[in-house]
Image (cartoon, rainbow, N blue to C red; front, side):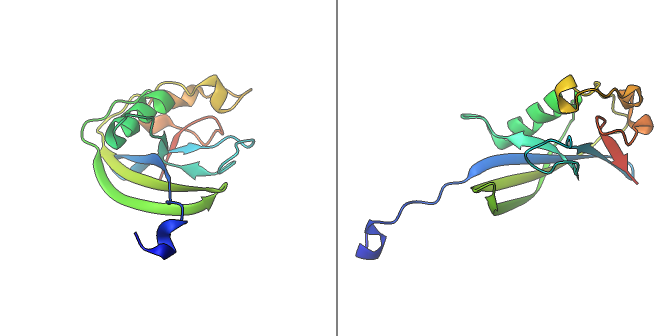
Amino acid sequence: MSEARAGATRHSARLATVALVRSGSRVLLLRHPPGSDRFAGRWNGIGGHVEAGEGVRAAARRELREEAGLEVGALRLRGVVHETGLHGHAYVVFFFVADVASPRLAPPRASSSPGTSSPGCASFPSWTTSTSCSRPCS
């Protein structure tokens, strides 16, 4: 090890996933609640942190099940982004894409947006723009 590197600390980053699920020309997005600590009120794909000992593809599948009640077939890795500075942490984000013909979604968890309901979230074509509902963009 060189002397210049002797006192240096190693860079570390948190691992995260984002899955974009497509059905024809529509894309499944989730709107973060207004009080969220990250991306408040903004739309994003479905994802989250990779747990210790979990593979990135398994993490993406878990997040899709937890957040949308959705099981998908093939998840294709489409990109990896190293991001620094989000809330003082570095992230390596793995972006996946899945295609589905006719998905059925679970209603959003109560914790995703307290005080709202979204009966239109039952199927892909009827998603609404409710703050508690995942929806496709056209």
